[in-house]
Image (cartoon, rainbow, N blue to C red; front, top):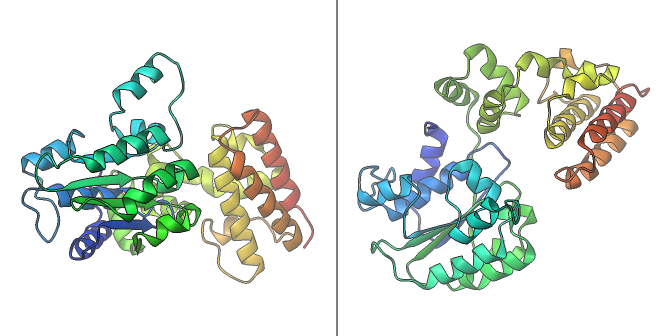
Length: 331
């Protein structure tokens, strides 16, 4: 189990001291939106909460920890629920087991309708009810509009916590009905210490944190996926050579993200700023700003459809070819 990060604990104390029936936790990936949402929901439902959050010992905390709390409604894409160990509804699980369909990558409107029905029930434990929505940007317009009425006029004992890594994609009407909290960035020493507690080697932690742009949960995910920091450092020059082997074991979405980081750093250096994801010494010589801008636009277009590549192998080859062309353009 992942240890609670000190910057998450501090934000939980801050938000628990405030009132509000709906919070929207926003910021880029890797800063702990889900972790903070869980801490808030757990504390709101706890039988004996304190200023620091849930007690961790009562029957409510136990039910929450085993993902069986009757006063908690979790709204997530089915793929995310499976990854995080949350149980699916009986009908959804049966459909997937019988291969009638694949787990959804969006928050399904059927799940949202169940949540609206949940909102009308009486609290089973008398501490109120909580709906946790993550990642909130995975609601399509139909799902979001189904939530909107309940979010606008919730029953008196219902609280919402929405967590998002792309809050700009949410309907303005959803955002306007929530109290906004922008996730705090941890200090580097805090992030490194936490990564070591989580089992990341001290020699790798700093490089992985740099590859994640200072976002500790993303750095931990890189480590658990077996990403070698040394391979990351070699990536820029491998792309300049057109060496597709450097991305051979990467998912298309991972490859696009890595190349976007490389493009960002090269454009930053061209503008006189410091790179963020790679060491300056590991970057290839300066390339054309016009070519880098065009490459950035191509990567953004690819990112919108990367979850559904027609042919993943061909996509990776095209990505490497684009990178090689941009990196070898004349400044």
